Amino acid sequence: MQDLKNQRQSIQSSFDKQSEKARSDYRMRLNASIDVARFLLTSGFPFRGHDESEGSEYKGAFLELLKSYGDRSFDVGRVILDSLRQHQEDKLEELLKFGEVHTRQGLNQSVASNGQGDTRWGSHFKTLDNFLILFSSIVNVLKDMKRDCPYHLDRFAAENLLSKIHEFEFVFMLHLMFKVLLLTNELNKVLQKKDQDIVNAMGLLDLSKKRLQMMREDEWDSMMDEVSLFCGKHGISIPKMNEDYSNGKSKRKRSNISYLHHFRVEVFYAVIDLALQELNNRFDVVTSDLLLGMASLSPVDSFANFHKDRIMKLAEYCQVSLVKRASELNFQLDDFIVYGQKCDSKFLNLKGIKDLAKVMIETKLDQTWSLVYLLVKLTLIILLLHSVERAFSSMKYIKNDLRNRMDEDLLNGCLVCYIERSIFKNVSNDAIIDHFQNMKTRRGQL
Image (cartoon, rainbow, N blue to C red; front, side, top):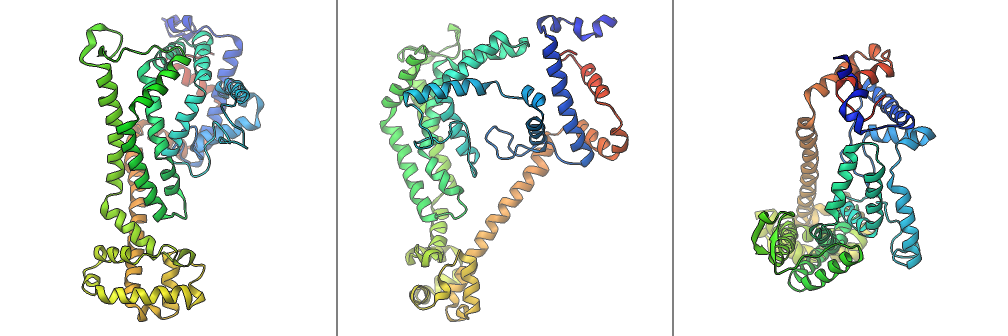
């Protein structure tokens, strides 16, 4: 019975043969993780970040501290490095020789880095771009894992991933999603800027929708040519489009639709339609009119975006009293823009609607052009409501979604470690490691 409890004599251990070096590295990783977790628990700090993806600027306290620990300790840093790095460097060197990737003087400054301000949308675009460029390197890493990884579960996972990424459907989806994100990437970047140019953003919105529609109507053949060329380059088999589609290798799973129908209608058309629907839902006619109207009131660059018709449209949405006094508002706007652009230097170099409201109050122009000022105030309220909505959305995510994901035992454990931290500090790493190993069978043995 005692032998059955010994992990070194378990069936799993017979598959996962480990060298002394592997066991030493495993213990080092555990100790580093425990040291970081101990600090966070006794300090009452959260472990996880909102976005722990590779491109995230802040992955959470645990991962950031562990990385900092590795940066300051060569041995710890060595055991937590990503094995993809060397293959990526080799592949980049090869691509640079053939001119497929440019250096900082060219188009791509860095193949695997995400700059500040990247959102999940932009981060996904760069991830897919990198995946296409480094496809051969990724395959090589998976082959190495399949052959050399000490854990049989990891070897199985690598083999499964290799099989998946060498399927035509995966390659097709990879190219399709890259193209869709590429067509909307400029819009995404403009919307993330702090000094948003709404007028330009609305123009890019229309452009993105038109490009997606053009892709849906005219670019199926060119898309298939790109995918076929990629498959030929990497030895991936291409199904015959007139044959019945089968989901998997089993012939029993064949359907009564062709590969052409599946990829063109159920995938190509469906994905583009979803992207168009998302853009239309987020930026419907009312939202677009409001945004353009607020942008037309902006004093930035001496009211460079001033557009009276858009402002009048904004007034229609904002308040009934403004609609009833439309002719008076129209006249006040004519006077206001001439005065703001040519008669008073205080209106120069203003940074936004908030600054405009302050200057109008300071110069008593809120009384002179009361309807214009009312419209400015309503615009500020709209912006405030948007900020409050975003804040409450974040609070809901933290208080509900994240909390629901946490197991109560984990939460209780964290509280015990924090409340009884004077005792917890005296618990040795070795005792924690022994308890951790005995909780269940681990891939790593000590």
